[in-house]
Length: 219
Image 1 (spheres, rainbow, N blue to C red):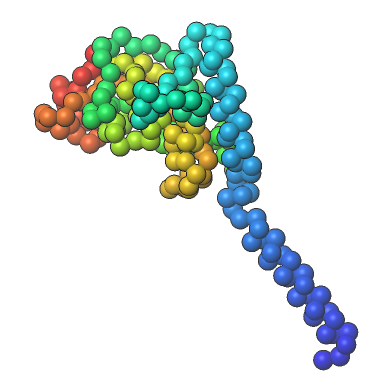
Image 2: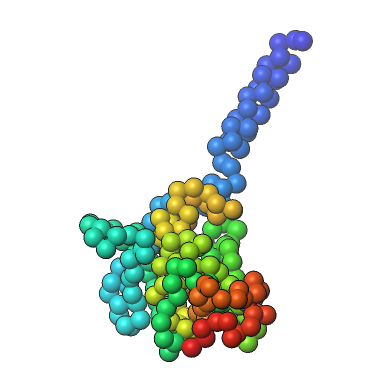
């Protein structure tokens, strides 16, 4: 191999190594969710402050159900933020050991491929503004089997309530990736509580749409 060919080969190897290094330093998650932790923290801070101001009288902050009543020096991330879109007239609230029938949609903050936010769960077609109770397919959840933020909201909701619930990442999946949800993800939920079921009787169908409504508290 002559000197010119050898130098060309060395330069080619250097370029390829640089490209491989660049690829390894910029994986899919980093591209899809740039500055993710910082953005999620800043967003929740802003929505928490908006709730504290409560200019329209529909905002509230609710401490995580799992925290002790005597817990001192609570931080904003120990709370969920809710905006009460509709106020129900149902009596009582679901308990930790109950199952619930809900319409819901949950999504993340906007990211590179999902400018409206990646939807992680929904019971109707479209986004928040597309909710239609006539076509939405109800879901059934066990209250105690959900993330802290969702469980906290359900235990304070009455039948007929529809809340926009802002869950900080600490009350969601925390600092680890989970099932396609990146670490440090806030989750924004739209939840409509239709009914709840106390354990001890005949178990309703898993598919809430087909459930015998006599088994559910619906008012």
